[in-house]
Image 1 (cartoon, rainbow, N blue to C red):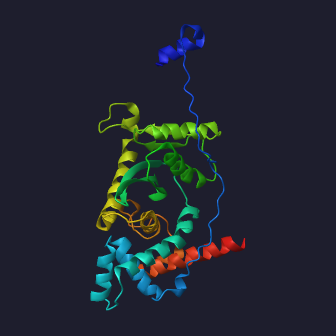
Image 2: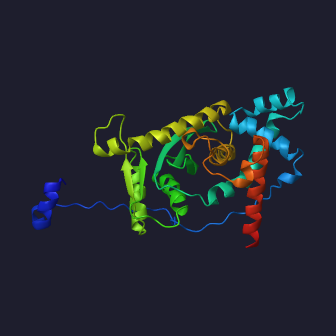
Image 3: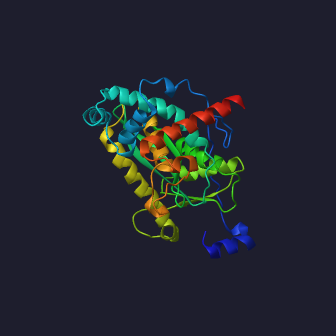
Length: 303
C-alpha cells in the first residue's frame, strides 16, 4: 500500500480486500539454540612436523592462496622439506577441525552493520553455494555456510550464525542482502519465533529504489569480500569432498578475521589479539592461533 492507502485503511478497512500470506516451514530448527564446541580428536602436537613448519604450510596454502601441489613444491624447493600435496591437504583438514570452534565462538566486538551474499564453489564436480554474513565496519566474517542448495534453510542458518554472536537482538537490527527471496522467507521464519529484524534488499545494478540507493555501499563491501575469497579459492579448482570445501573456507575465515591486515582498518587485523600481535612472522601467528583454539576446546571440555 502507498502511504495514502495506508491512511485510508485505518479509517475504512472495509474498503480494502486484504490478503495475508502464510508460510509453513517443514524443517525442525530452533533459532538461537545454544551449542558448544565438540573437542576434536585431532592432536596437532603429534604431527610429524614442527609448529613452525605447519605455520609455513598454512601461510603458503591459505594466506597466499597456493594450491596443495604448489605448497608442497615450495616447501621442497625453498625450505628443503619433502612432503606430498596430500600431506598439505591432511594438515589443512586437521587444523580446520581445531580452529573452527574458535572462529565460531569467539566473542567478537561487532558494529551492527551486517551484510550477506552468496558465492559459488565446486564440490564433487557440482556447484555449491557459500553463504557469507559479514560485519561491514569491523570486517569480521560472521557466517560461512557451505550448502548444496540455495534455499531458505541455508539462509536461516547463515542468519542464525549472526544472531547468536550478538549479546542481545537490537530493535533496529537490519541485514543487507541481495534480492533473493530466500532472505525474506528466513526473516518470516525468525518472526514466527519472536525474533524480529529488518531485511534490506539491494536489487539490481542500479539504484532504482530508495533501499538500494541507501544500502548499496554495504552490498558492495560484501561483494569485494567475495572477490577476495575467490582469489584464494581459484587455485584449488574445486574440491573432491564436502570436508575439503569446509576446511578451506574455515581456514580462510580464520586468516581473514585474525591474521590478515585490512586497509580500511589502517593496516590492522579485524580481530586484534595481544598475544599474537608481538609475534615476528606469519608462521608463528598461525601456530599461536592453533594453540589458542586448542586451549578454548580444553576449557569447554572441562566446564
